[in-house]
Amino acid sequence: MEQASADLSDASDAAPAPHVTRAPTPIPISRRVRNLLILAGVALLLLIVWAVPALLGITLGGFAVAMVLAVPVQQFARVMPRSLATLLAFLILLAVLILAFYVLAPLFLEQVGALIRALPDLLRNLQGILMSALETLDRTGLLPRSPEDIASRLGQDLQASLGVVTGNLVGGTLGFVTGTFSFALTLFAIVFVAASLLANARGFKASYLCNVPRRYRYDALELWDTLAHALTRYLGGLLLILLIQGAITAVALFLIGVPYPLALGAWVSVAAVLPYLGA
Image (tube, rainbow, N blue to C red):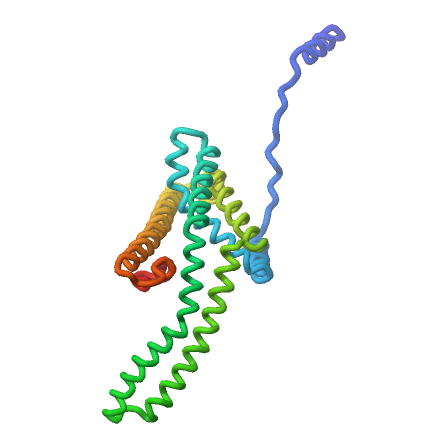
């Protein structure tokens, strides 16, 4: 008996038992508690968005940048690691932005300033055209007051409105282009969010699929791929359309001698976010 015990002891010392990992102990949560936790999470998220309004813009901006860069990242990832592909895509984007800033920004600011200085003359020309139209309507008896009173009232309202819009535009443009600390911080946050989304796209996709019931995972995968493809193509196409419309407008206005072609081309690009409005 003692010999058997010794043999067993020697055998146990020679071949230790393999370590057995135990699954984590599940924590049962009732449906009511789960719903309360979800509501609390949503309420906390809304509170954060309300307290920090820039957070929503940063998140959406980072998501949009990630969607636009998703296609080049996928192309680069075929010949290099995904992390290097993401870095290369951001470097190309940074180079394009720096080139546009140093080449186009001075011309843009100069033309915007010239356009603002020319607004009084433009308003006087507009008042002359308006007076001609009002005199025509007055001869037909369609005006409740004299053309001079109506033109004066409209001119004052238009000048006041343009003054407010111009002040906001100049302040916003200068603050955006010169790059205050707040803008730099926001830009860094947008780039960080976009880089995180691009670098961890597979992890997010795996987490999404793991939280879907098994019998719906094929449909969930198809929804993920279709939605990602549609958003990427839409945002990329929208950006391309904005650039094309602005460039064609600026070149055409320059060729026919219209002043401020770059500023007006930029306005067409911004307004073209709503289809046909820019043109």
